[in-house]
Length: 65
Image (cartoon, rainbow, N blue to C red; front, side):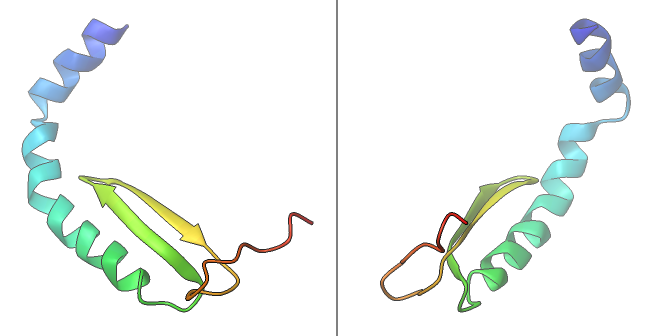
C-alpha cells in the first residue's frame, strides 16, 4: 500500500505542488500568529501547528475544562 501511495505521489508530482503552494500557506499561518489568542504559529510545507493561549504575552494556557 505504501509503495502504491509513493507511485501516485510521483505520478501527480505532489512534491512540486507542495513547493508551489506551501509558501502561501505558511504566510497565512504566520498571519494567524498575529492574533491575540495565538501564542505560536509554525509549520513547514502544508503542515502547521497553532498554539492557542489565554494571554499572548505570558503564554498562559486556557483552563483544561
